Amino acid sequence: MILVTGGTGLVGSHLLYKLVNENEQVKAIYRRSHTLERVKHVFSYYSEHHKALFEKIKWVEADLNDIPALEAAFEDVDYVYHCAAFVSFEPDKYYQLRNINIEGTANIVNLCISNSIKKLCYVSSIAAIGHEANPNQLITEETEWNPEADNSVYAITKYGAELEVWRGTQEGVPAVIVNPGIILGPGFWKGGSSGNLFRLIHKGLNYYTSGSTGYIDVWDVCDVMQKLMQSDIRNERFILISENLSFNEFQKKVAQQLDVKPAQKEAGSLILELGWRLDWLMSKLFGKRRKLSKQLAKSVRTKTVYDHTKIKNTLDLEFSTIDNAIEKVAAYYLKDHTQL
Image (tube, rainbow, N blue to C red; front, side):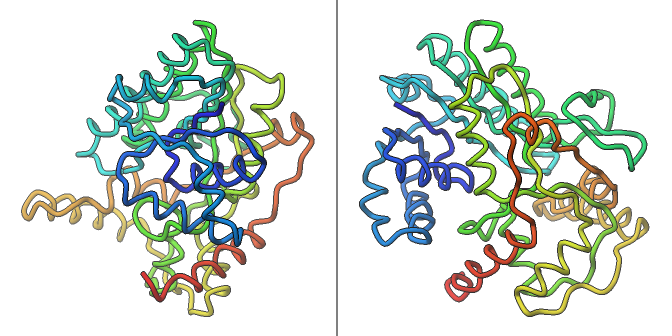
């Protein structure tokens, strides 16, 4: 039996579809019942029999910090995909991020230990990988994390969650960690998911930024996760990206597929530095949610390039192109956007 946490998220829902479509016995954790509709919607993209496939899943209502509910979810489970996470770059969400990403992962790891789970796969992020001083230097799995750097609250808590997974490996639980870049996939067009980028570009952006990062599609992420779980590989981490792209290149490619005009003006350092300070002031004066933190303003103008050699050589695979991913996701967005 396989357990998937975060089953109602982008990665979790696509992983669930892949597993049940291959007749695996699956349990999945959810927190709020209305989010199950998103999973059904994702399933409907890929099969006329999506309702029957959805009903194969044994759903368990649980919070990552509700130990009794988690204990019930772990009954008869052999393998665990830990996809659940809270994604936010708002500094005032730090303790909520710690509670879900670090403490929640610690609870999952503890239950993996006590239930003698055969293997754990944890979905981390490239945010939890260190950075190179030279922007042209490829970032690898071995790039050292610097705790003294001005890391985002999200990055800090994802790195802390990885430490919990490594602790689990020392206590007898085989594990693999995947560190995806920005994951492109359909069905989640708001909030912290990459689908929100498609929605914002479709509405029209005024500015682009000069930074770059790594991208991968959700189908490749799920495929790699399953291959790693079915292999003899243990206690390793892998960067998952298909390509490194500038934010400007990405928004142009998406705009072309959505048949809208891309942003033409660059948001330079001055605009971004003023922007995050004004954002902070508005949050203090009027209690508005932060949209642009100091760390995010720096990130979107920083060039980072990631090396996917390790996973490609380990599994002897080729990733789908980002052009192909953008085309597919844009088509699903255009199909859905009238209902947003």
